[in-house]
Length: 161
Image (cartoon, rainbow, N blue to C red; front, side):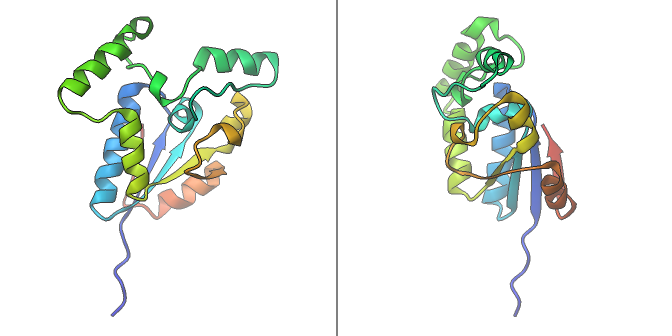
């Protein structure tokens, strides 16, 4: 008897905000734990979720400035509201820890363990001057929008976060 094809879901992660990255990973891990095939396509500010720690990006003056302004990996993500120069991030991390909510780093690790597929947007990386070497090793590939659309058309659901 033929094996039943898994349902697929695609998440387009555009935001680099703490709460939106968290939502993306919660949905992805929930879907993967439910035996769905999950593709996450990270673009523009969402690329923060895939960056290695302490890596500077940008070659040109403007690229370097963008790297400084956007700077940081997943641990530097601030909430979309109440950032308050990093105080909001600190508060949310404390509140989440007190309630037993996994950190962004832990959620990303769980997604990796559950087989979620991470892809980075080539155009966004080119514009923001983010080299492939600055991304975590678990990024399957750097791809274009056509790749994401191909996955999306086969998906049970496609979410833009």
